[in-house]
Length: 249
Ligand code: 8X3
Image 1 (cartoon, protein in one colour):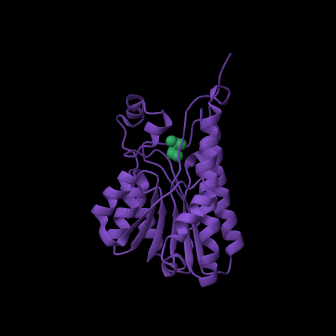
Image 2 (cartoon, helix red, strand yellow):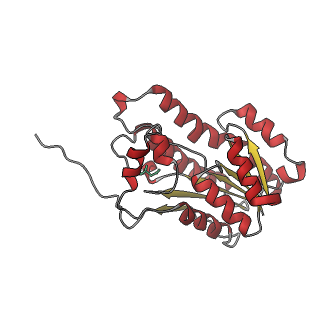
Image 3 (spheres, helix red, strand yellow):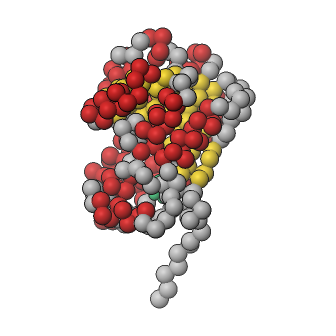
């Protein structure tokens, strides 16, 4: 299969690209760090096609996609909208607006840019699969989750709405909603490079790993074409959604 994965330079995206290539697929991998894309290219070989652009920029997205051979662009079997980030864990009144903008630009705009470019090509083939990486933060609010959680709520609802539009077509949409996942740059980025603070998030807890998420992606695309897994909500056994907070006088 031809599979486009956004955000392959680290974390989930890298693990997804590595696993899918090991299974014989062709992966078009997007990212913004050329040196990381170069490393992946030498590691993964001919079946890895790197594309360096910023998904939050629609015109850069269109330009980058046009560099692909036409028979590849028009035959993308799977789009994995993985790229996304959290910035900050402060209460809403103490946030940096630039962080909010960047989360909206990447998690929402970036995801719909790719989807808007690729989906019509899938519909023309009446064949395709869109896998979106959302988060449990899109369903369960938490302290400091403010705009990050809201962007993931968008991804979750957008995934469900895509299925509404695509009913009866041979195009599947799945939404993966991970909870606590380690082994990625997620918290290092969230805490603006404070690696010690990021490490504390994963200290003494068995988190879900990028390999776990990659396995889920591989499992999804191996399902029969008439089977649509609408959503996968996944947490480590060490985590729960319970925890409604009460502040007493
Ligand atoms: C990642 C999960 O709980 O850190 O989206 O928001 S969480």
